[in-house]
Length: 389
Figure 1: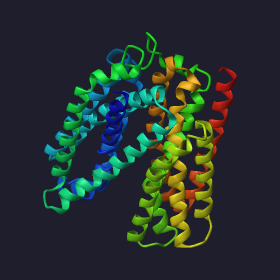
Figure 2: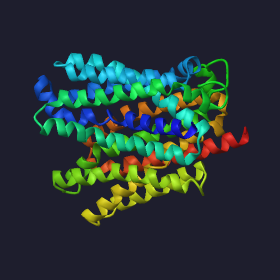
Figure 3: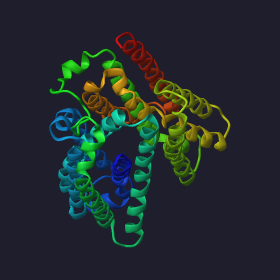
C-alpha cells in the first residue's frame, strides 16, 4: 500500500509540473490572437502567483481539516477546471478570471504534498519527486507544441492538459483510502496537532524568518535565470537568439538531472550538507559565467547553475519537520512556499528594471548577491534551530 501511495504521489508531482510552462510556450501565439501586447503575459502570471501565495498560506488549515489526500484531489480538480477554462477562453479578461482558480489550486496542493512527503518519506524521495515535477514541466510544452504544429491551436493544448488533470483527479479520488493507511497516525493530514498556527505564531518560531528569506532567495535565483539567461547571452555575450535559447534550456535540464542525482547523494549527505553543496555549485557556475571564456564556458556555467539549484529546494523542504517539528511543519511549509512565490514574482522584475536602466551585464552579480544572502540565511537557520532543538 505504501509503495502504491508513493506512485500516486509521483504522478501528482508530474501533474503539478504539467501546466507550469504552458503559458510561456503558447503566449507567442496567444497574444496576437487575443489582440493584447506581449507584456500582458506578466499580468496572467502575477494573478496565478497571487492565488498560489494565498492558497499556500491557507494550506495548514485546509490540510488539518480535509487531509492531504482530499486537498490533493480537490486542488487537482480545480486546476483541471482552470485548464478547461483556458481552452475555451477567447479573451484576455477570461484568461485572467480562469487564472484565479489555477493559482488557488496549485498552491495548496504543492504545500500539502511537500509536507506529507517530508514527514513520511526519506530525503531521496523528495529530490526524485521534484525531478518528476521537472518532467511534467518539460512535457507540458511538448503537448502544446503538438497542438500548435498540428494546426489545432493553443486551446487544444490546454484542453489536452485539462483532460490529463481530470484523469489524475479521478485516480486521486480512488486513492483516498491509501492516504489514511500511509500516514501511519490514523489520519491523512500528517500534521499531528489540533489547531492551525497563526502567521504571528509562525514568525515567532526560531529560524522561521531565516527560512523564509532562504526560500525567497532560492526561487528568485531560479526564476531570474529562467527568465533572463537568454537575454544575457544575446545582449552581453553576443550569441544568436537561437543558440541562446538552446543554452538557456540547459539550466532546466541541469535542475531535472541534478534532482535525479541528488536522490542518490542524500543517502550519504544530510539535507543541510546538500543545500551547502548546491550553493557551492551555484557559485562555481556564476564564476564561470563571469570569465571571458566564450560560448562553451557559458554553456557549462548555465548547466552548473541548474545542477546547483537542484538539491536546494527539495532538501530545504524535507528538513522542515526536523527544524520546526512535525506539528508545525505544514504551517511553516505553507509560509515558506508563499515566500518563494513572492521571490518568483518580485526579483526577476527588479532585474529587468536594472537591465533596462543600467546593463544586462549585472546578471551574474545580481545572482551572486541573492546566493550570498541565501547561504547566510541558511547558515543562521541551522544555528537557530540547533540551539532550540
